[in-house]
Length: 461
Ligand SMILES: CNc1ccc(C(=O)O)c(C(=O)O)c1
Image (cartoon, rainbow, N blue to C red; front, side):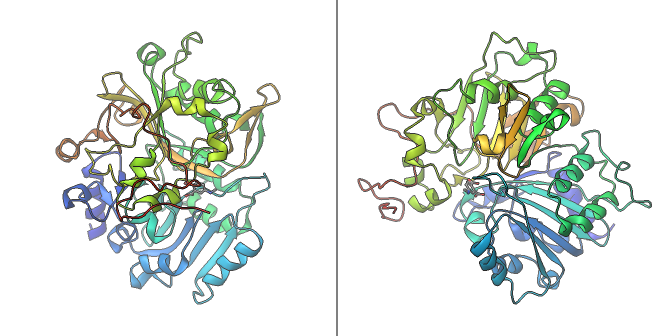
């Protein structure tokens, strides 16, 4: 087999999950080894001989992005899928004026406050294609000193006969990807939709959890956002008897308005979906919810210093309306992965065992803790209103060897030597906020009492 088959084999042998963190500049090399990738590794010729690619994202630096491809691939057709409108769309398109191979697709954002948050790469090679679902913007700083997540698909071979229904996996990966792309109703995606239908994606073992803007009713209500996750957990998740006393952990880098109290959405519909299980859930027990969100000092002492907080857009105006939320918060700590000072831009959700040795499932996604991303039920629960485009992949033990649970660890020594321990991006048990001292990071207030890693203070606005 040619070299990239070998390389792919190595990646897949490194771990069956194909879940990686991004490389971080300034930490010991051992933490940037087999389980970490840079964008240049993803786009490398070792992964395949690129013919064309499609980049879905929120923020783009087009000249920087083109430079991340090997030079022999920099003039291959590149489709950029974004959510910019008006002047900012013109500015983005102007950035590509020198690149005749770059085309644009503007995702419709008809819901107020919606964003095109999805971060995905479609990579077409001469021998097949890969799908990459991740959490980094396509700008240098997102790949420099942050904690970000990446899922890379196996190489999906081309089928003899194109088919939208054949060549799917037990997790309906191909069908869900086609549904997601079709929801854009964008003619610029037609060729990629056809391309995908020509590939055999039966080796995909993750479940796609996507969000698309709209007011979704009927069957569509359970195709997106937290209602999709709920349905998948009810069908393929852990049994309620096993997990009913297990916490749900949410970890994210931005937060929307949660309403007046925890029952309004967070511990009502959202937690009900994330705590779904097979065999129904005992409504009485509302599961424990634990949230991971950096403190002001986590940001101040990070590798980037206060500027890391520029990518953690929690506003004081939102925070002051939901002080109840902060009781759920825990610090960002990732000693095992050497990333305690690499601020999180990754977003992950999981259902860990009380002894922190197992998880019933793991989701890495673009979705922050917001109703815009996950959806909010309306009209007595008959419709799900979603504002933004999001996409993530759910790892379920059932599809990784028919197990009931994943062993988990964030300890890179443990992860390096085992093949089927799920690599957690942060440490368990979680670390509490220090009472009376720690505050959640907020990006739009000044911090002038203590200097950051670079000796600077923070004076936004
Ligand atoms: C309003 N725009 C954004 C808010 C939050 C984030 C995040 O991921 O935390 C992003 C992004 O980086 O895509 C954009």
